[in-house]
Length: 306
Image (tube, rainbow, N blue to C red; front, side, top):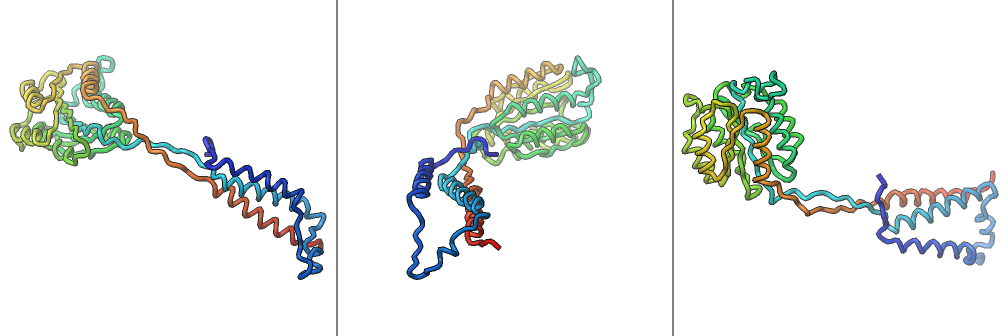
């Protein structure tokens, strides 16, 4: 708690020498003209002398220490205003339950591998605001834009296959990213759209062209990722081309990990150098002890032997 404390006014400690000098050369003068016998009442008892000496000097030391103003610097990183707004759009339809995407653990669902890699990506985006859109038969914002990476990782970890229905409303999810990234926290907006299938026309309520217009009007750059073998490559390429992004493909865990690494390189999280330094003052601790010692000094100073 008290590590790193320093004094704002260290020269105040020179007052110690003043008190030491006065201890020997400045005896207390009693106006006996008005109170001729007051010295008898002011003389401390022998039994209380050790208490007087201790509390007198403790109060002096503590008050001078308080006047020297002990402080501790606490620094905080400024909230990034020049980073990215990143929308993570994840397919949670029934096709994501396919196994074998991880060569080293064939029993894992494709969706479990995606969650692991996306969480790793979230961890690496130190200075960005990230949000989450999940889609299946319908799409919804699972997490608004946040700077709390641990909370977002926790939400991603608890996602389940079919949480948004069994089908694939791909274009609706793309349009939903506009709602996610509409707060204009920063001027850099990107969306990473991951899917393993085709849009289900019966349930995808928004046409592709309409979704693309919304995304382009919001100035969102989209990086579509197709995983597995049954996605519409032409559609994903069109989304990337018209929004200024790039389309990626991944057939296994290692390739998907490299895709997110590539996006992380293409859109690097900006390193901030702005820090807020707060001064935490601790003068009240020695001041309290000093005043308490002074009260006890006065008490024992005026206490007479029984």
